Image (cartoon, rainbow, N blue to C red; front, side):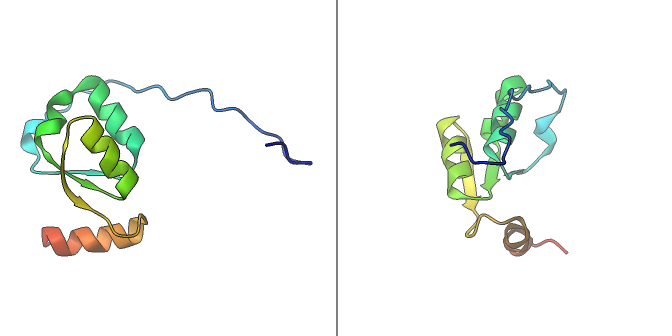
Length: 93
């Protein structure tokens, strides 16, 4: 949609950078965006065997579509609230 006085800049794309991460040392993974899932899946599919915590229902859906295990889904989709939920669930500090 065009809006007077606003210049639209097209998104050129996202390039995932391969990383050498040993996921075997993690008990859980926390995802705050679908792009994080697509990124990790592009270079290491072993993440699918580790319980995942999703910030929101849309992120949960992508985890499931990619074959991952969803352990928990945040209630609000906001970072601060998600952190507080995880703190309680994971018994941190």
